[in-house]
Length: 198
Ligand code: AMP
Image (cartoon, rainbow, N blue to C red; front, side, top):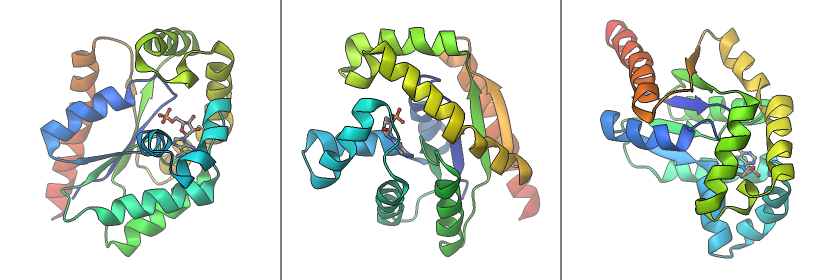
């Protein structure tokens, strides 16, 4: 079992790359943003609660997010591993994930960050907003807020895994295929490490 956190600012390509990785490695993709959007669309209580934060580009409170994530992980039957996308976004979420993995007799193998500049993110998100139907991608102010939240609250999560010697960075600029190749190199390396250990 191999569990990977795909990390990076909004618009860094996590969702696109996760879709490629699950095909290649047979992993399960868990995106907290997608889970919230599913709840918004279906007008659930959770969706209503999340909407006010999402519309402002703010994080949904940790207790709500962690509960949703745990339920989603526990729903999976015998996965080859997970790709977490958009989670953890705070240190409290990183602690909760560590705890959850331990309870499953498993662990996070690596956090892999996609590096993309602020200017590139803004232009990618505005472009995505033209077709994604996501209101948080259409307003430059909301985009800017999401980047600030990433830098203030989420970026420290990289240091958390770095101290555990589980952090990797990959250049997030280039074609989808080029970036996918860089990610494959990291994950193949992680698989080799795991094979050596077992
Ligand atoms: P994303 O699709 O990952 O960009 O997430 C869209 C929005 O959902 C974010 O701007 C947050 O409002 C909310 N969200 C997604 N994941 C999390 C998380 N792990 N913690 C808190 N809020 C989240």
